[in-house]
Length: 316
Image (cartoon, rainbow, N blue to C red; front, side, top):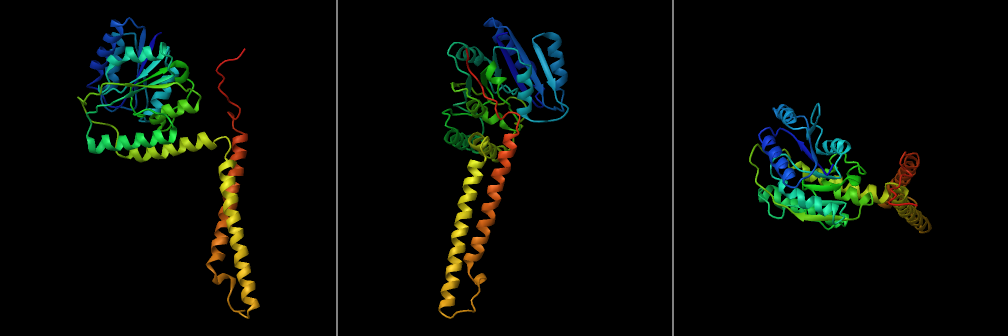
């Protein structure tokens, strides 16, 4: 099979028939063998009934229905496991992503050899204040931290080589950072294509402002796991040792001050009168806790089932 089109959705009953017809027309015009995998993420409208009708009309339609709303990342994870196409293309169900982009995305993966091609909505029709400006700031931060030079990490329109889609685990809300997951997994050839963005025709957006806060937290998680996931002692042990050393130096200063006072007849000023005493105590305790956190992290990492899981590209 040439292409699997994966479409996660939540309450998109109005757009589904038009989207299916549009995709089918593009596939037939380009003589692609294909499947369309709809993932109903707990819709409360008639989306599932419409998907079942589309299945009766076409054997190319496949579907997954969740019992409740789990989120976009679980939807993509389950669809990637089910997909059979050589190239897997994801798009949103709201008709803001154009299926006319599919042939070129497919070509970039199959002919140009990209592992992942991410869409770039260079001209957007969203509200500038609530979506465009936060999105630009979000993407600039992601580029800076990840080192991946693409403009739109969260674009729903992406094309994947099958090995990549099945070789990464998309979990929690990590669909925003699939390019980062791909890079961390060793897939280095990540490309970008300017794609047409269309205004929403039906319904309203399912994503709130909290996605930006959660997005930054998820980015920090990915950065930390990539850098220290298999060697937590390198982070916690280092900073624990530094804090303990600074606390120990503060203890020496406090002791020296007390000896100085005793030599000059000042026997009434207590060690606890100095702020350095509390500073040294706090830093030594924090240093010890950080060091123990690193030690426990090493024990967990050592016993993890994937501690020696390495992706081999070729062997003879």
